[in-house]
Each structure stands twice: as structure tokens, then as C-alpha cells.
Length: 255
Image (cartoon, rainbow, N blue to C red; front, side):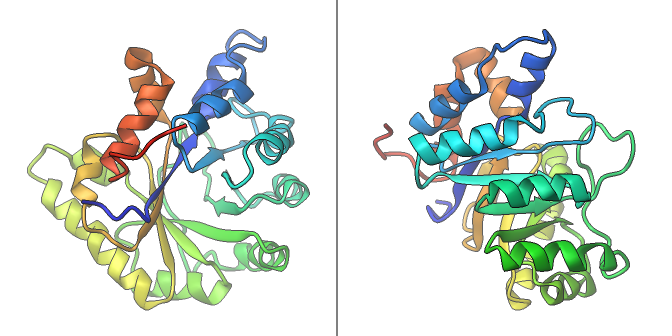
């Protein structure tokens, strides 16, 4: 069974995308937060982008205030590129974790990790400022990142890496499944040797999470798309609980 140290952070971007499609207030993001937390989620993730196509900039502090008032102890994770105006928002809000993600123009979703040390200069000041504020820093990282990349992340002051699990998820159920699973376990071991803690995210679901059993260094997964797709069939509460069960939290009493 996967270590119960691994926590679930639900990414609510797609709830915001649906809301924005009508330009109104439904679905209510704070209600989505409440339902996810009541179902047992340990954290809430948002990923504001420059075009504000899902989470808007004004959502970020509103969700932060709601969590602190109604759900103390629930972790807030802000994923973002290190753009100055977005980082200013992160510093204003003061989340428990900031996951820095490289962004290329026109991408539909995050699909690659940081190329370090080549791009280290872009991260020196952002990571230092986040560390100074006591915000945990995680860097989005490819599962085949070389040791030099991990060493650079540690030298920059990152606390964690978040593995980009898109290739792992795409290989699930194919002949490449075991090779991608081995790649994930390999970088997990290498990250630990560099003193980096481990998160993971992208296309993880209630099925392919089973392939990460016994990855005891995995502390947190962030799941959004698969959760809301499943919620269309069974509802938000059930979809979140299924993910928790896949993570080894079955048998617990949820609020």
C-alpha cells in the first residue's frame, strides 16, 4: 500500500474554467473547495496563468482567505511561472507551497520540467524570496532529469521537486508502463540523495496511482483534470474519495 504520508491536493482549475465559460459565478469555487476538503483532501492547488483562462488573479487571495477562515490546516499550493506580477501575488497571499513551473507560449497545459542548470538564473531571486518568507518551494521536473538538474535545484534552495507524470500516465496500460514506472522510482531515489523531497502531478488518476505503491518518499500528489472528469460521473465527493483510497487512505473516516 502506498505510504499514507502521501497527501492529496486537489487542483480546482477546471472548476474555474467551467465558471469562466459563462462569465458568471457558477460553479462557486469556494463551494468546490468546501466539498473537496469535506471529502478528505489535504490541500487545494491553483495555477494562475497570464491569460487567466481558469483561475483568475482575484481568485487566489479569496481562496486563501477562505481556507484560513474555514479550513485551517489545509495546505494551499500555488503553481505558477516565475513572472514578477504573479510572484507578487504569491507573496501577498503567503501559501504553504509555491510550485514553480516553466511555461512556453501557447501551451495547453504544463508539459515539461525545468531545464537546469541552464535556466537557473531565472530562479535564483524567486526561490530566495520565497524561502525568506517561509514558503515551501517545489520545482516542476521531468522524470528523466539528470543528476545535474537535481543538484542545481538543491543548490538554488528548492525544498521539493514535483515530478511531471504525463509520460508515466500516458504509458499506463501499454508495454512502456514498467519502463516509465522505473523512471519515476529512479528519480525519486536520486532526488532523495540530493536532499529534495518529492511531489508528483499530471494525469494521475485512481488507476495509475496504483503503480506508485511503495514509493515511500512521495509526499504529495496534485490532481485536477482526472478528478473533475470522474466527478462528472460520480460527483466531487466520490471522485476525491476514490483518489484518497488509491493513495492508501481507505478505511479512514472523512468529514
